[in-house]
Amino acid sequence: MYLDDTIAAIATPLGEGGLAVVRLSGPQALEVVDGIFRPSGKSAPKPSTAATHTVHHGRIIRHERVVDEVLLAVMRAPRTYTREHVAEISCHGGLLVAKLVLDAALENGARLALPGEFTKRAFLNGRLDLAQAEAVADLIHSRTELALAAANEQLAGKLSQRINQVRDDLMNVLAHVEAHIDFPDEDITPDTRAQLLDRLRRGADFMEQLLATANEGQILRRGIRAAIIGRPNVGKSSLLNQLLGHDRAIVSPIPGTTRDTIEETANIRGLPVIFVDTAGLREAGDALENEGVRRSRAALARAELVLHVLDASEPLTPADGQCAQELAGRKHLVVLNKCDLPRKLELPKAVNDACPSTLQSAPASVEVSCVTGSGLEALKDAIKNAVWAGDIRAEMLQVMINSRHQDALRRARESTLHTIEALADDRSLEFVALDLRIAVNAIGEVVGKTTTEDLLDSIFSQFCIGK
Image (cartoon, rainbow, N blue to C red; front, side):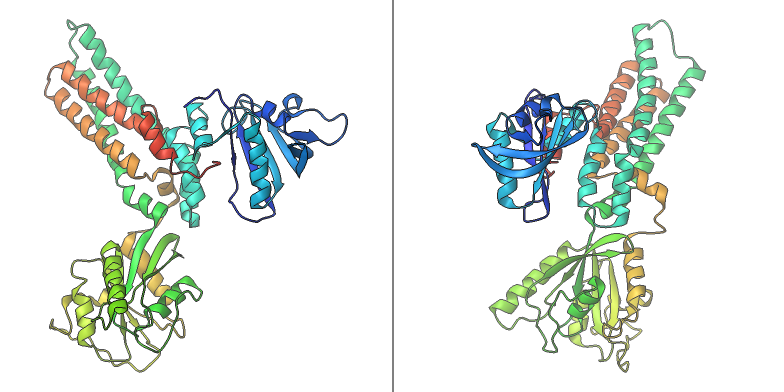
């Protein structure tokens, strides 16, 4: 990447709105704006001579014609998001207005920014480390307050501080080992070896603690998929609407109304849960219905949790049993719907064709009524407890790692354990140093102390343009 050019992009979502923001960053950002911005007032300064962190009223000119009346924010390096000169033009919202302002900037020397390029420059210029940069994307994509809190903790550097501490400890051990390699006549004393081993073990233990947060971290970031299944007309779509708090799926007394899968995300006790209403698992009557059933099975295969809905006002049917059989070995909850009606459903105590073992887990069953809303809060508690054991504590949010961190930490811990084994067995210090360098490099990947251009491209390509 070339950091000596100036980039520009629309930093707000496309579409009609009250405002849109066009952002520029780079060494010539203010000079580019000089060519397109006409300040109000005869004595008003040009952007390139204006004081930093000031806002100016004026107009954007393109091809000698006024594009829009705008406000221009001037921010000089290094006190900016990218640590470069930054200009932000606030214009009226609308696809055409923002596009013409951007076109004017591009025609005057700026280059269209790549996805995530502003944040990538912030990383390359030392404004953020890699873990903090990833937190920016997590912040934007947060769907619950807990996910937002976790992203803010990571953006504030809480995870980075701990990672850097462990890396520093490993670096200190490596320095000791390499010093003894350079001076082979001086053996490592037993006391020194014990201290080095203790430091390595503490580092390995801490990495293990971080790795234990990977599952929860991924749940907060991307949510979990919960498939709602059951035979036709047991209330699957009604349950989806109740969990979402609004009508999303068509509800009808006619069995088989749902022909396709419907996905929607809800905040369940602070966790983003992607509910998938399915057409049900049944014998298809036509090609269209057969496709709906196929999609239902595909949704079931991808789901991390299954809500098996039964009609509590009717006796158990063979179709209920067939649905239950497909859940063998899957994490699921049995939802007994229509509990506002007289109860006719009884689950036999013995396992048989009509009642497979998956229907005998009474503690995992919840009674609800999609008409009165009773039991829904208990169901939400059960969903949360099924995917997240225990309470969600504030300190947990500080160190929740993502899948990239998980891979780097797993490699770092494995190499640290090899180092411990080699040092404890008094093997050649060259082998000790080799494993330890691998561990230091791997843990450095989390914060970007060691990285590659391909890795950076992969991470920042997932950002939106303008961020």
